[in-house]
Image (cartoon, rainbow, N blue to C red; front, side, top):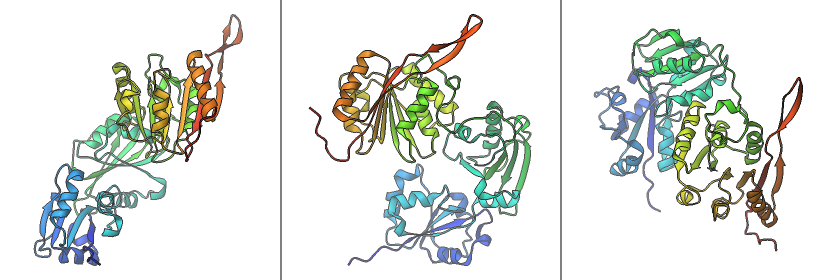
Length: 412
């Protein structure tokens, strides 16, 4: 059998540097022939203790990582990580690149653990949001009255940016605690209100603790108010949207194609179901496509990918979906066939329409593939003179089906 390569040792290190490392972590670094890390982390290692070759991470990191590891294959390799390598750290990227069985991970307390220790907050009841390499609007999804958040900063400017976002979103009274250089002799804490943040940018190595207090109440389940969306009228309305998401049944890690995105409401609320959900919204109108991106950002899911172009042509190079929603363009030649063919076995397809022509098409697909064919009708109470009556919205025909795991003959 060929000799197995030596494991890659991943050592978590804090702002306290060498003095804060456990004996096992120090020994691993002293035995290493090559140590890879960020410039700040590498500077924490005393040359008298660690004689290994020091290599700084390239940028961008992920595409260069396989080649970098190959350059040092066969050597005793250690990688430095901030705090706990498996918590928003390089450990995950390494595990995805070389496999978890190639790693020996030696964690250090994370900045989140230090922050909860300083503030007396229970870690299991505190939500963590990372803004490292992520848009600021990512924070919006976590904003709920009375909640506590720990925000991992991208740089020294992040605290002021977070304060401005909180104020814009109606949480100006939130209390912020910026914790710098946690665990080091230079540790410092800055406090203030979001709508009156008094501090200039400080140390780039910081974490923001947020006590939200009072603010606008949002919902965690599908069916946000229609007014939450910027729209030109092309919007799956609230009650139909909630029913549609229930059938699409988002699950962590799954990918949705939202075909004929309109205002993007189905894709947005799919993503809001779980932080690991993924979605692509396909919209042929460039103005609407830009509007979808704005809706996604304002509702806390800026990770929504928006593809501008007509379906089915715009679907050709998209990754395989776990679910497909078709909200427009059903009569485009080949659209339903393309979506059904692209869907993975066991995946869900849901299509909504208000026109007779598209309803006839869905009825035919129901005959061929089964599933469920339902009509959704919603009426709202409105004034009628001095009384109250019902105003009926256009009924929506919805076909939904699960793609079989094995080939299925069409019904004759």
